[in-house]
Structures are given as structure tokens and as C-alpha cells.
Length: 571
Image (tube, rainbow, N blue to C red):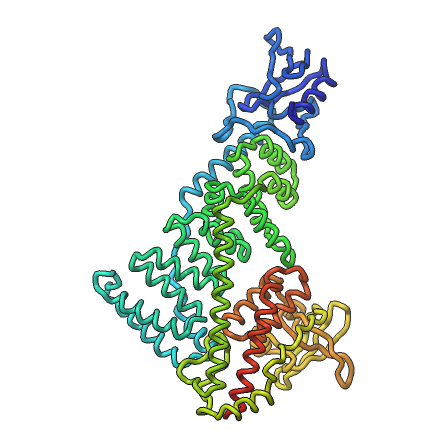
């Protein structure tokens, strides 16, 4: 006998002679007086019938005259799976209690909604932003690549204008070939690989488009690139990769941000049975700087759990959670309970694919790292103007001609001893939160209130956030009204006249700061990326992504400083 059946047996036995309403798995409701309870069945006396015998395993729920269903979370851990495979239906000819009708109808409506949405939802391929490659190439210091990209984009626009992008015209093939050559010169620009994927998609080469989109996403780790990976993975019927890509999207973006793409993801989970991935998304967003989920997102996530509970044969659990929802329990309280019922072993295909993607990302980073080392070495040996560094924001086009080996060695030793390790990573200082309430733009200083109650002076040179600088430069009045005051994070340093604020940044949620670090890294500005990672770790010491990249990017930043010092020394 299952635990639920035992509880059912004991409670009905204790109420012999009392009135009970039984809700069967079929949706039928049977009210009556408890006459007899055996190990496997219960006998009810009902109006118009001498007696009715019901097998305990056919009972999904029950309530007593007070109208409260006696199924609690602690009582349904071992419930047997129901045999329902379709949305439950409500027998209209039966006088069900109001709560029972409402619960069953809600599950039926929710099931129909998800089925309809999943049939209609899709991940669309969106043309990349044409401004991004220009901005990215300039940030990487690849000035010579800018006119090459402009030429490629103009050729594409001309072909599109006369409607000759189809493979039969032969123009798109040449454009793709030129873009591949440019990518070889600038492999650290994800926007170029993003465009290559889009061009390959236009030639109907879906496999190549998926491969290029993966390369872009592995470098950028941005939601927009993972969304493109998902679109091409669906086209290539690679459901495991599509599921992984959308997991990355929803760990970074709101569930409602990309139209009905959420329903595509739920459909992939339904097909694979990898329901445990919902737990990964929930944990990633839940651990971010709260509040992460909006109420609409929480409801959408709970509805997805209820749908998957129904689809996996756990209708009694879904009905009980719905009963609590209708009773006023908020979605955020019920989500952990619903997810716990769905958590299980992720399929071998998905695990294999996730490991493959992690290895590919590591390989991409190693390739950039080798490229940086090769260019640094070429610069030391006077070879270096043929190909500039691609993942650092330092242009080496002014490197001097060849220098004798002995002089190179002496200069290198003076700047950076050959065997000296990079400086140790220092922990981030304590981050405080405050609001800028005045800024004198004509004198480049201002004051802010700290959350600790203090007022602090700051100078423009202490701002490390370009967005904050732009915000201050746009001010028209020095004194800000309360609604206009700018939220910031800062550190306290001791100045000649007392404490002052340094390292000012716009206040952001942890995942936004991490995304900014990724953007800086993609632009080759590893020192800024490391500063943002330290801010992340100061507020969330267990942030896995920040810990994973901190050592690598610190090493890249040290390499950049070394290259700058060397190139300065040879001028």
C-alpha cells in the first residue's frame, strides 16, 4: 500500500459514519456516508443507492464537510502515477463542489493554453544589428578591419536591394568568403561570426549557420547569440542543443522578454523529459540580486510546472498546487514545491552535449589566449605589424623594427622578469550603495549620500563606469531632485580632508554587472572586465561565472599590460 493510500485508509477509517466527498481520478465526484473501510476499498452509502464500493487507488482527493482537501505536501511524496494522459474533463451532469469544478477547469484551461501556444511558438532568426561590428572592431583597435567590414556590408545591402541574395545569383557566396577572411584576421569579434551565421542561413546552409552561431555565443555568452543558436538548432532538429541554448537565454533574460519562445522551451522539455533544467533556471535567477522574477514570470514558471506535472502523469500534485493557488497562495511560494516534483535525472544526450559545449568554450578561450601569446612574442622579436592582437584593446601597429636579441632580453627583464608570475588577485573592497544628489559638471565633482547615512565627496576621475559618466554629462542642473538622484555603488577611501567616494559605478543587479564584464571582455578590455567581476564577487561570493573567468581574465589583463609596456619601450 502506498503512503497516500495508507493515509487515505486511516483518515476514512477514523470518520466511519461521517460524510465525505471523494474526487476520483476520472474527474467524477462521489458524496456519501462512510460505511466501511477495508485495506483496498471503501464503501459509501449514497442517496438512491444501497451502497457503492470504491477502490482506494481510484481516489485522487477527498474532502470532508468543511470543504478542505486533505492532501498536504508532506502527504503526497509517494503518490502513485495516475493513468490520465489527456487534460481532465469535468462531467457536467455531476453536482461537483465549486472548488472542485474550479480546480479541474483551471488545469484543463492551462493544458489547452500550453498545447495551443507550443504549436504556434517558434524561435525567429533576427537580422543582426549592423552597428555592432563597427563598434566592436573599433573597441578591439582593429581600425584596418573597419573599411573591410563596411565594404562587405555594402555589398550585402546592394544585393538585398535588387533582391539577389539567393544562391543562384552567386553574390552571397562571395560576401561569405570575404567575411570568413575577415574573421580569420579578427577571430575575437563575435558580431562578425553572428553575421556569418545570418548570411549562411540566407543561403539555406543551416548546419553552417548553426556552427557559426555557436562560435559567436561561446565568445560573447550573450542572450541574443544563444537565441540565434536555439533558432538554428531547432532548424537542424538538434533539440538538446536548442534546449541548452534557451536555458542560457532564460538564465539571463526574463521569461516573457522574447515573445512565445518560452513555450518552445517548455515543448523541448516535454519532449526530452529533462524537467530538472527548470531547477537550473530557477536557481540561477533566484540567486541573482533580488527581486529577479517579476510576478508575471513567477506565474508563467509555475504554469509551466503544472503543465509538465500533468503531462508526466502527476495530476494529483498539479491539482493540489492549483487548489492552493486558487486559495490565494502566491506563485513564488509554490514554485519550489512544483519544481521539486519535476526534478530528476537529466538525459545522457543533454549531459553529453553540455559537456561538449563547455569544452568548446574552453577551447575558444585557449585559442584566443594562444593568439595573444603569439602576437606578444612576435612583438618582442620585431615581427609584429602583419597581424595585430585581436582580443586585447591595444593596437601594436606602431611597434618598432627588429631589435637585437640581447637588447630585447635586457629590455624585457627591465619591464617584466621572464619568470615572474602575475601579481596575486586582490579581493574586492567592500561595496557600498548610495545616491548622487549633486554634481557640478563645470568643476567635475559632486556629492553622494551613502546607505550608511554618510555624505561623500567624489571627483569625476573616481568614476569607473562609462554609463555613469554619460549620465552625469547629460545633466542640465547640478542639484538633483529625489526622483532624479542616481543610484550608485562605491568604495570609501581616505582623502586629505577626510573620507571620499572612489570606484563609482551605476547600481546594477548582479547579473547585469556580470553581463557588463562579458561585454568588456568581448571588447578586449580585460582590466575593466576583472573590475566588474570583483564587484560581482563582492556582492555574491558564490557566483560561479565570475569565479570561473576571474583568473583567466586577470591573466589576459596582465598580458595586455605587458604588451603595452613592451611596445612603449620599443618606440
